Image 1 (tube, rainbow, N blue to C red):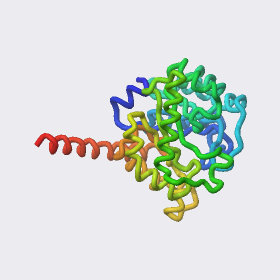
Image 2: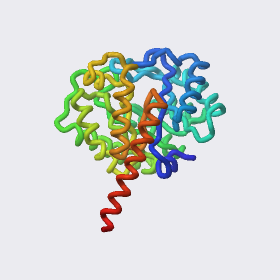
Image 3: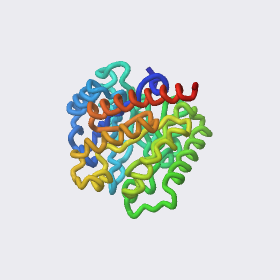
Image 4: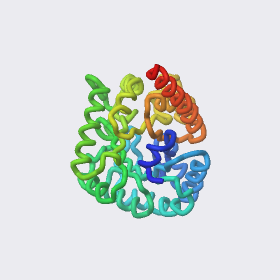
Length: 287
């Protein structure tokens, strides 16, 4: 089933994070070995992941960029093997902002591109996406991974992030990408202060109301640790689950997480509640 069909016809989707990198913020080095990466991806699929998001470059705060050739060497063999190992309805995405890496990932068997720069890093990317007819995630980020947490500032974070994403969606469509293949991500933790992230989470319904598919990525992020007084990313599972439930109630479609089983449960329960809420509203409107 294609991603656009899944979004229209199923419950919220869980995207499992597979960082085949040595330096990602909470799992760097754990899955840089191909055998470990393949095993972890299959485990995530068994736990309920609808999408496996394979990344060969860390975008943690302060990270330096990784060249296309190094990213391709990390992701392409893994994606090629996963296409044979995963259930046929489990989708694979490539977490990259470079068209060369995206093309290698798509050729290996991926069907989604997840770009933290929303097409700004490589002007060729939108053309590739339009040609291949695949979905792309457009994420908001102030600055670059190296600089994004150097005192980010906003006058109105919701309006500015929303305005940026709508502008990038317009640019994507101008390049020939179909609107149903555009997914918007407010970029929680990317060039935002703690309060900026909290305000965005309080207004997720604004993003869900754009008419585009939406993605939320809060998994293990440090702003939640600041709220919970917890400095260890891997200890932020309960906090992540709370934001997943919140996102489902706000109408978000896809959740990018490290911990699949727990977030799958949270999404399923929240979605069941949301369906009853909608039914109650329809009954009230009819009376």
